[in-house]
Length: 192
Ligand code: GAR
Image (cartoon, rainbow, N blue to C red; front, side, top):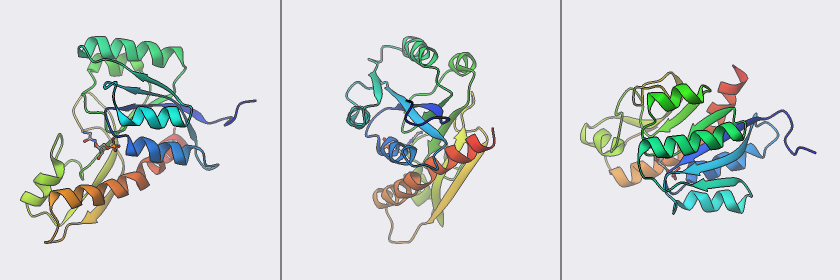
């Protein structure tokens, strides 16, 4: 018998450590979760996160990154074959092409470590500190062809204190990332 009947099949794309993946896996096993994690794909064959997936007996694929087209074609094949309903990027550090987004044709969500539309791209915490911002945070948004620009699903702030530096700010933001990503996926699915 299916272990989590009625839950949507999610695939997670990662590039490294996978702490967000870990929090998603944990949440997905709770009754209130509207999703289950069917598989994990990484563009980095050595990604730590792939080990979490194995530990929790989730199918996982490390694809040696030769170029975008090759990676995306291999990923699409896996996603289609497995009947994936939605894709979630969790620390995935490549930019998906418009072609991939069109061909996948199902929702794609991303978590970004800033209060979008502020600080798209990299080094978000450094930029927030440099600009003497009062708040930093994380955003879950839909993925479109324009980098870090799709519709915002959920956002949460943390206060930046004078004593903060980019390293501890990163840790504070990561902590809230772990709290909001799964919640945002559930909210998104509930509204589909
Ligand atoms: C997270 O902070 C995530 O928001 C960020 O990478 C980190 C991955 O950590 N993502 C991006 O910067 C995407 N542009 P994790 O591998 O431990 O989840």
